[in-house]
Image 1 (cartoon, one colour):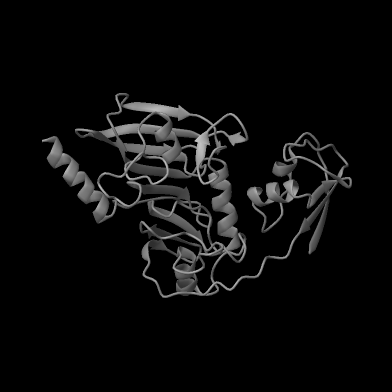
Image 2 (cartoon, one colour; image 1 turned 45 degrees about the vertical axis):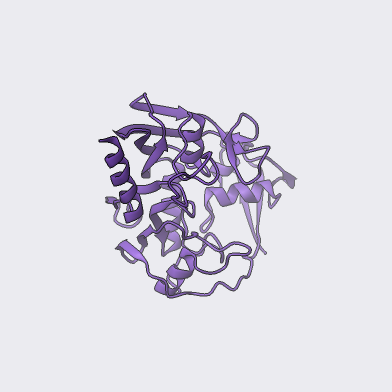
Length: 302
């Protein structure tokens, strides 16, 4: 276990913002604080603790867990790649990273085969290169970091809400408000641990901007832009306003069209390149299954 000792030189800053250590993202720092691996003058503190000048911060960084994640020769739809990062178009049905009971066929398995050792190790052996993720049955664009420097930069941009993340989805029913903002906190559903919900208890701020793109007879095509990135955020927020994403196995009441997963696609991602400082933006239209759904809905609407 690696130990790092810092002395606070200027007070008044939250501890999770103050600590700046190579290889540790803010999310990782927060987890270390919550687990008691970061102390102030020998005492455990909360993530929002404001430091005082002269206090000693001790950081214990555990060794990464070992796991046998096998590289697999799986096709990748790579939209962009350089020495720092990859933008990949993930297909619907693919899990992003391995988890207990699901160690093969994931995006990580495919990325490891493609990149070899050239992947960021910041998120540990289970999630090499993974800066953010989208759900298994959501298709679309993801960022993968090849270097720790790229990973830190991209993670910070996501934390500061400067990464552009635009989705399109087909929702049940007619959304009468053509543009809007859903500002509703999301946390674990107390009645079902597999689901998230809008709740004031043990939740985090969640904001989704939406705009209607097209109306159908009994459905609406919507563009959603994330201001925050909570688990299942778009799916939960659209359910919250009474228009769940079509085909959603958790939040829609049924799947009459047999979509086998939510009609949700991460269409646009934009960010500042960690090395060049240039703003880059990429887009990818949804898969054939999604486009076929739109064609069917248009035919029924005519």
